[in-house]
Image (cartoon, rainbow, N blue to C red):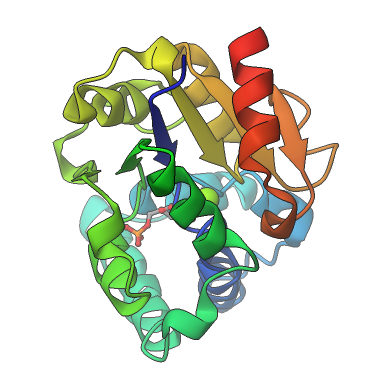
Length: 220
Ligand code: BG6
Ligand code: MG
């Protein structure tokens, strides 16, 4: 049976996906590359530098900046993002997510965090959720970002569980691809269209139902 859950953070525990979007959008506009929410779906789950590359490619400007200049752009975005997340409190947990996590703990499931964000531990702390997670994958130790399975494989490894005994929960297309490639049961939070590769999907975290997920994962 299932023994662990590996969670994404941004867009699953809290709505920081929206802040990432706001911060990238502002940077995009500053450098003459405006984009919308549909394009932003391609940035969810993607590391800071890879996100910048995708935006520059969208504007055909990937060769207009040196590596040092790109690092400044990425760091400007991160400074803006850090301002946006300054006010996060436990009230910013997405609907139902705390009850879901508590139900998982009550069932004896082991929990790990697999966020691509270097700000992940700070956000987890601000949400008051650090103690629920036995393991947090450090994204700076990874060779490949999502959609590569590495971050989820590592999450299961840190829990000491085989991937097949873990469920992964994500709001990003790249994240669902990573969970599937890791051989875990994938649960998507988002629209049917963006979550079409997920084994099971819900439109809101409020609809995450532990019993339903455990049944579906066991039946796969
Ligand atoms: C992911 C987000 O969790 O973390 C991405 O979905 C973000 O949007 C990535 O780019 C990296 O985050 P950070 O905080 O290290 O820039
Ligand atoms: Mg996410």
